[in-house]
Each structure stands twice: as structure tokens, then as C-alpha cells.
Length: 348
Image 1 (tube, rainbow, N blue to C red):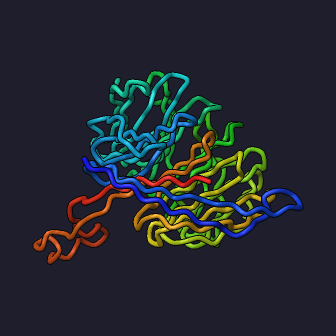
Image 2 (spheres, rainbow, N blue to C red):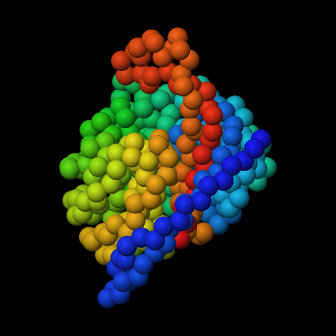
């Protein structure tokens, strides 16, 4: 495989990065063509190791983020969406929408351990709630979306709840017994009790539309919700929107670096990532908008190395016969073959 490398470096405007002082930041964007087959959804960064887990539809590629080289692969993950890592048990787990299973694998060797059947179907998002020691799945189930709790050690399903939307997206934990779930269709965040999996509240997110990515900052007790054009910050006690952030369109995830106090909002339609600094719990300054690649809409941040990662395949022209056939309403138009696979690292 021939690996192509591109680097773009730019200086961003000065921003208030500490009380009473302004400092300019430089963000470096590196792009690597890592090859391989399959589309994509989420990426997951392993804190401190440089390893990044990239969903590729039927398998998961493991990439050395410092070099942009493929160092491993996890097979048999049909219509894979997300990957969660649990260092406590040396377990990784993937959501496989194609056969409604979660693949549990050994994080060190990448060898699959077992497949866990999830009856609700619609598997999509996945996150590890470390404080409650649970994996939380957010599923595009039908007729209504669900959240499912899984024991990260045994793989046992320990709880299921129905949500108010059939398109739940990202989830985040406050580390104190509550789970927050973005509902893309209803433009709300639902609050769940982590132990009982019962719904405690539903908070409207206006002016946010289509909330997907989410993160929680314990130091400020704030929730960050990634939305198209306008993302929002919520007080996690009251559910009140306390700040808005302008960003691009085509957002499907959100990254948060609690040490650097930087929010990364990827916009796949605009080929960009908006980077925002948290000046105080209710004040946010955009410090950069960096160019990535069209379609790159999900992101993961390594909070130890302070690097953000994205991935997006590049497709050639669709076959002539397929391109002449109009897509079924609600379905994606036919795609051509993958001609490149762009792994992107943003550092500063």
C-alpha cells in the first residue's frame, strides 16, 4: 500500500487562554491516506498511547496516530458504528448494526472474545461510563430509540430504557449517577439515572438543531452538545442553555479536551473543525477553524496527548448504472469505490 501524507499548518487568531492574557495558538493538520475498504462512522482515541480505532463498516482499523500507519484490524463487525475502550478489564467493545451485536475484544491483542446479542436493534452510539462501570449503547431502534447498559467485564445486559426519539445519538456521564443522551430528531437531551436506567428529565436544546456529539465537563458542570450551525452549552443542573457556539454544518460528534479546555466541533459538509476555548463556564471563544476533508463529521480527542483525530474515505464516481437510478427516499445515493482513506490528526 502506498501511503500519502499532507501537512497544513496555520496560525490562528489570538484568544483569551488564561485570565487577563491573550496568546496565539498554532494548529497543525496532518492527513494520511491509510487505505482499506469500507465506509465509516465513529473514531475512538486510546488515551496516551497514540492508538486510534477507526470504524470501517465491516471491520475496525487500528491506527498509530503519530505516524498515520495501520497497526491492526478487528474483523467481523458488520455495519460497525462505534468503539469503546475499557482499560480496567482490557476490553474493547464495538456496536455492529448489521447483526445487532456488540463485539468484545482484547484491547492489547485485538483478538475478539465474544459477540453479545442486543435484542433492541438499531445499534449506533457507544460510550463507557467509568464512574458507574457500564457501557451505554444508544440505539436507533424502531419504533422508538433505546439506551442499553452492558457490563463491560462480562458482557451481560444490565438495563434497557425507551427514549423519546428514534434517533438518539451521543451519550455522556456526569460521573455522579446521571447519563445525558442527545436526541437528534426531537432536539432534546434526556437525563437518565445510570443505575435504574429510568428517564429523569428531558431538556430542550433550542436554538440547536440535530444534536449529535456530546461531552460533559465536571469542573464546570457543563454539557456541550454538537449541532448543525449552532452548538450549545448547558448547565447540567438546570438544563438551561447558557451559551451558543457558531460552527459548520454536518456535525456528527464532538471532542473535548478538559486539560486544554478546547472543544472540537467537526463539520462534514463544510470540511472543517471549529475549535473553541472555554474561557469560563458560560463564555466560549472560537480560536480556530481548520480545514479537514469533506464528509469528516466525527472526531475523537486524546486528552493525554492533546491531539484530535478524524477519518473519512474519499469515493470515486458511482457506477454509471447506479448513478442513473434515483435513490429511494431517505436512502443515501449510490457511492463509487473508495479511492483514498483520509486519517486526519489535529495538534497544537
